[in-house]
Structures are given as C-alpha cells and as structure tokens.
Image (tube, rainbow, N blue to C red; front, side, top):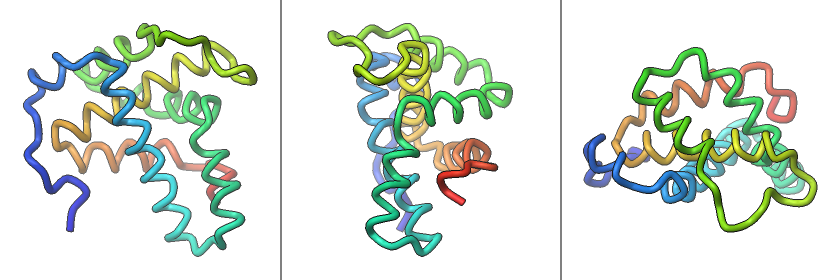
Length: 138
C-alpha cells in the first residue's frame, strides 16, 4: 500500500489552499516520515520518541529546508515562499528561533503540497536528501 492511495488534488487546486492548511497537513506527513525512518532503523520506543522529537522541531526542519532548497523547482519554491511568509495567529514557540519556525512552516507547507498533489516520489526523494548526515537519525 502506498502512502498516496487517495484521489490527489491537482497542483492548481492545491495552490488554492492556504499555506497554513498545507503546513498543517505537511506537519503530519513529516512526522510520519521521521517515525517510519526510525522504525526502519530498529530503534526502541524510548529512543524513537527522543529522536522523533529531535527530528520534527523547528530547528531540525529548518536545517532540512537548507539541504533541499537548492533542489526545488520554481513551483516548489513558490509553495515554500508562501509557507515561510504565512503568519499563524500565534508567535513562534517560546524556545524556537522565529526564523527557524518560519522555515519549518515552509518545509511543512511543501510536504503538504507534495502529499496533496500525489507527488510521493518527489516527497520521498527530498526527504531522503534532507536526512543525509542527520545525526539524530543515524
């Protein structure tokens, strides 16, 4: 069974979604990818939780965004820009840098967009690149 076995939205339909809607979905997708990778590495439950928290925080997602940004298409860059510039009704969490938080929202929006448009191969490729040399998941 594939991650994407549902009727995908067209890119045009997905672009009509607010970047915060895309980020909401993308947060779940990113968390699923991180947790799946940790299970594949055979981590026990305690270490999986610690590593998952380390892999889904704003700083880790900002670092991941840095790694994949040069590889993005123009369409993906637009989604990232919209996600980065989106303003939630709340401030960045207390212990997170606002710039990291904006970049993490951008990454989540991109993940949500790729998931919603059925671009599973692209999503998995960018995730793999983002996790190269990631100490918390080695």
